[in-house]
Amino acid sequence: MAASPRSPFRSAALAALALIGALTGCAPVDAPDSAPSAPATGTASSSSSSPSTTPPATVPETSKPVPTETAQPTSTAEVTRGPEAAQGPARTALDELVVKGRAPKTDYSREQFGVRWADTDRNGCDTRNDILRRDLTEIAVAPGTQGCKVLSGDLTSPFTGEHVDFVSGVQTSADVQIDHVVALSDAWQKGAQNLDADQRTEFANDPLNLLAVDGPSNSAKGDGDAATWLPPATDFRCEYVARQIAVKHRYELWVTDAEKNAMDRVLGKCPDQPLPVDSVVPEPSDTPAAPPSPQPAPRVPEAVEPVAPAPEAPEAPAPPAPAALYFSKCAEARAAGLAPLYAGQPGYRAGLDGDGDGVACEPRR
Image 1 (cartoon, rainbow, N blue to C red):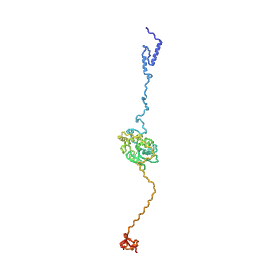
Image 2 (image 1 turned 120 degrees about the horizontal axis):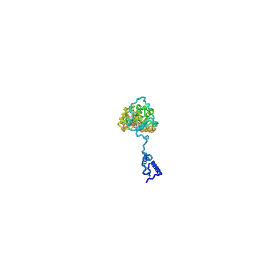
Image 3 (image 1 turned 120 degrees about the vertical axis):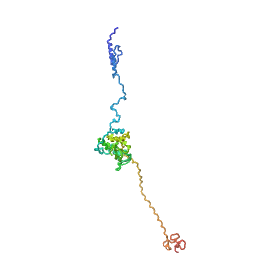
Image 4 (image 1 turned 60 degrees about the horizontal axis):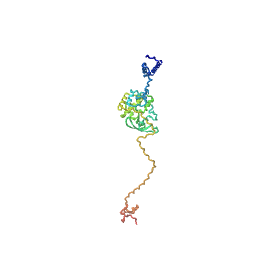
C-alpha cells in the first residue's frame, strides 16, 4: 500500500524538535527511524567542549599559590644590608667583605670621627664611662653624676687575661683604656672616608666596636689590623677577629688581602665562631656600688673628758743607815743628847758602863 503523504503540521513539529535538539545537545526522543544521525552526533561533540555545560572544579583555599610579589625572603642573602649587626658564622661574613688595597691616610685626624666619647645613645653619660660600666665589675660611681662617672672597678683584660684594679685619677685612669676594635685610622683607610660625619661619630662610639682593655696592650696595638697585631691571649683571638668582621660588615668597610688571610687563619681554629651580637650598655644608676672588698671603718670612741690621775703619795725616804757612833766619854753622849745609852743601842759600849748594868752614861746623881 502506498505511503500516505506527511501532514504539513507533522513536518513542522519534527523540524521544531530537531531545532531544540540542536540547541540543547539532545536528539529528539521521538525522531523517526529515517531521521539522519549526523546532526545529533555533531551537536553532542560540540557540547562536550562548551564551558557552560561542565562547571570547573573548586580549588581548596590552602592549595592556592602565594603571589610572587608577597613572598618573603627565604635567606639572609636576600635581605638588604642595613645598620643592624650581621648574624651567622664569622667566616661567612668575612667572605662577604670587599678585598682591596689600603687607601692613603690623607686628611685623617681624630676629629674626623666627631667629639671624643660623645653621648650618641642620649643616656646622659659619655661613651667611655658607658663602656667602663659595661665591662668592669664591682664598680663604684661618683655621687652627683647621675650614676655615670666610674670611680673604681675590677677588669679582666680580654687582651691578656690579667686582672687590673681601676681607679679614676690623673695618674691611674690610663691603666684601663677603651679600645676601638677596628682602629679609627684603619677604618679611615678602608672606607670610612665615604661615610658622612654623623656615621663616623656613630662608628667611633658604637659599643660593638669598643672594649675596655689594659693600657699597655692598647698602646702596643696602635692602629694595627689583624695582619699586624693580635691579642696576646690566644683564646680571645677568635672572638676578637669576629668582632672586627662584624664592625666592618656593619659599616661596609673593606679588608686588605693580608688582613683577610690573617683573619681566615685565626678562624681556621674556630670555624663555627659566630659574629658577636650588640651588647647592651647598662643604664646609669645614681646609687653607687660598694667598692670591692670594703674594709670596715675603724670605730671612733666617744669623746670622754680626760680625768687627771691622782698624784701618787711620795714614798717616805728610807731612814739613813745609822752611823757607827763612838763616844770616847759620856760627856760626848750627853752633848749629843743621846745619854743614857743602853746595851744594843748605837754608841753604847761597855767602857762607858762603869757598873756593868747595861746602861751607860747614866745621869749624874
